[in-house]
Amino acid sequence: MITSIFSKSKPINFVIVFFVMLLAFISARIGIAKESITLLFILKQLALLFTCYFSLLLLNFIVSKNSLTKLNNYEILLFSLFLLLIPATTLNADILFSNFFVLLGLRRIMSLRSHKSEKTKLFDAAFWIAIAALFYFWAILFFVLILLALALYSDNDIRHWIIPFVGVATVFTISVGVSIILHNNYFETLNISTAYSYDFSSFNSLQFIVAITLLLSFGVWSSVFYLQNIKKQKKAYRTSFIIVILAGVVAFFVVFQTPNKTGSEFLFLFAPLSIIITNYIETINEKWFKEVFLYILLVAPITLLVLQFFTKS
Image 1 (cartoon, rainbow, N blue to C red):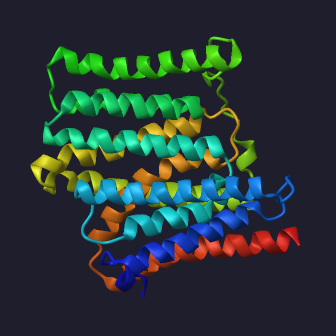
Image 2 (image 1 turned 135 degrees about the vertical axis):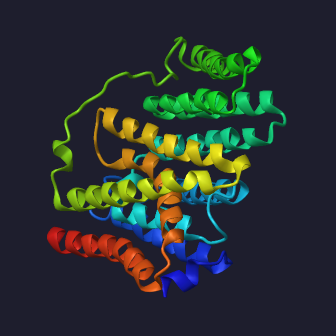
Image 3 (image 1 turned 30 degrees about the horizontal axis):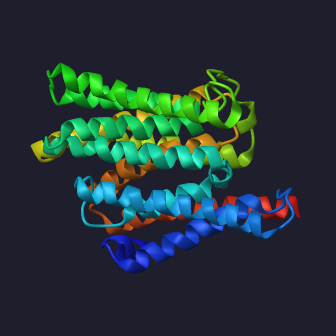
């Protein structure tokens, strides 16, 4: 049933995942809203909801533009199900915005494969990732992807290695200027916080244990097949596939370093994991096994959601 719906790219698929995302968004806010429901509050929540949805659309664009999967919509389904699995990922506005800008940066990094307008693309990629770091400092780790992409493309032009740093410096300079004008302070708008924590006690609950176990087990298992299949991809697209797995590794380190572990930091993992797991689903020949695989990812978040509802009531 699920495979027949999402095995081909159709407009109805985007409507379905929007409602899955909406369910995740609402469930995360039940019983924890501290603000009175005003017009400003509603507009703020709508802005966050559409940031989630635009992130999903951006993921779909990256995937289709770089042929990272076949012509299906499994990646957007998985992304929305991951949000439902850990609804807390929709709560932190800074991380939502940061992840969106990281995806914009990833889009420009992927486009380097065409070897056209490389200087512009390198600047843009660094610029977007630097903006992402303004919202959530540890997102700056994704800057490493730009340098790794240059190394993978064997780019020996020294100017190309300097441009990403110029992009970051540009954001820094603009931020300092804005900070001086608005706050009469050099670094007020710069969200520089190198704090980190390896205390995972906040994940000691049924919801997080089940969710993290599913993400890690499905992610690691799919990554094994993903790495094996990279050589089978067209030569022009291989580097893009490698960048996806590297983005997953960087996202894991971001989650690992996060000082306040609320679960919202897992959002950075969702895009690369969605692509990696989709590639594994595409290798499954038995339709029944493919259905079971997807139903587990569908039933698990719904079951956790029901349990959470009854626990709170």
